[in-house]
Image (cartoon, rainbow, N blue to C red; front, side, top):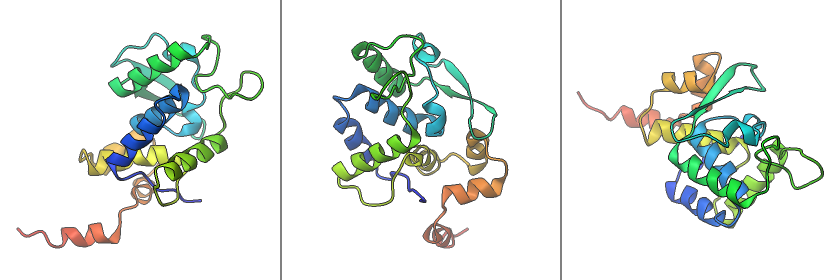
Length: 185
């Protein structure tokens, strides 16, 4: 299933508000829309990978899909959500940061995250196709549209193998292409 980004910043704030009493889920959502990482890579994080991080620290991980090294930077939003999650959970350093509530020490699955994202979007009456990959696509969309980051920089960040993958991933709409044809010089 092809999923969409969450385009409206107010809807992102609504989901964060919805998750205010669910620290693990709030951290998952916040990290997803603030890091540009794939959910499958976020789910591999252990508490020991992030417990002592400060704002601005780099966290290294190995991408499951590509086998490449990648990083994310602990920003203010992630740090606030992380501190709240760690304060309210009884997680040990060897535990997965996004521990499943089922059974032993297993992380959430990508499928479980897809179901969660769909539920959150339903609860705030957001229409469309949403899933786990929505978090990464949301980060990407806002980097490009809200902050004006070039697709070349995004391609590097996303660890894509070719520019065509990134351009397809960004989902540039026909209206957007036509809009630039109205620019005058």
